[in-house]
Image (cartoon, rainbow, N blue to C red):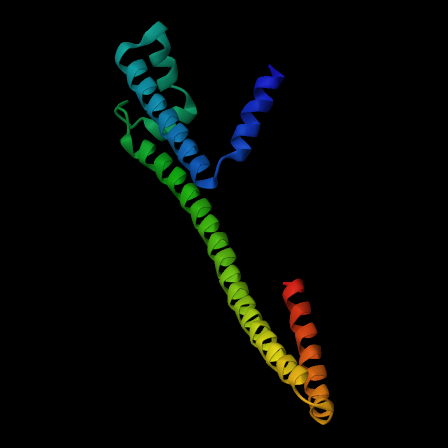
Length: 165
């Protein structure tokens, strides 16, 4: 029995949030349907004499029976409104969290894109300077050495930024 429960919860944890939401919505609608049908069946058929007992429960009487002992649909409507309010609050919190995450990711991608573009530009500058450095004579090499050293330092900084992202 515990193995089946473990397998069930493992499968549940692997499902996406949208899939979990759909399953929970179906369960809630099925439970609500069963409740409504059960109330109607008990009222119409008075199964096992339970109709009278159910109708006279204080909780049930307060929410679902009017002064003429008729079923009050306003009670069901208020229960549905509470369920809907709860679901809406949960769903809006979920959407807010998803929006926050997606905005953060977009911001990170834009920053990362700038760093990569800068790095690639510096790499191409480095290779151009190295080509000039290798083709130049001894006097030209002394002049280009500082530029090569400068671009190498900037490349190391950009590479560090890339690796930290």
